[in-house]
Image 1 (cartoon, one colour):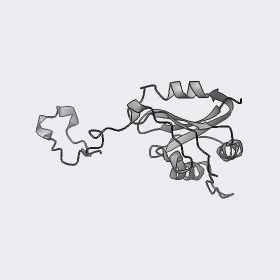
Image 2: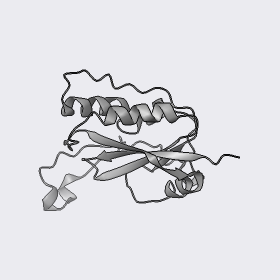
Image 3: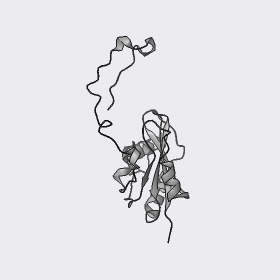
Image 4: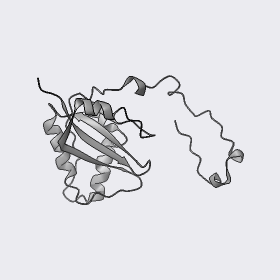
Length: 164
């Protein structure tokens, strides 16, 4: 019996100051994962920009299924959990042009995979029970009124966005 191995795709947010690991089943997805790695390698100098997330992938140092399952349980981030996928990975093409510079390539990667959109290209996400959204988690904050007069002075003048 062949044990499952997982490649690690990492998304790093300059806005949230977090990195999210996506464990993608390697067995059966070797070519698609190597294709992503090859495209990433075309970026000569990865740079963090304020408005995009950057990515890296490791298709050499694979982890086993237990390690991937253990790491997705970690509660280190505030925006998103680490995630594990057991499905078949579709081909991901960032449509790089020969004359694209690193910044254009980083934006193209972000447009395709940014903010957890890897799930558009692979199915069978292993979501632990304690990571499932409850009805309370799905409620909207649209109806919340923020009394800015009660906020500390350091918050005066901030753009108060309502997040859902």
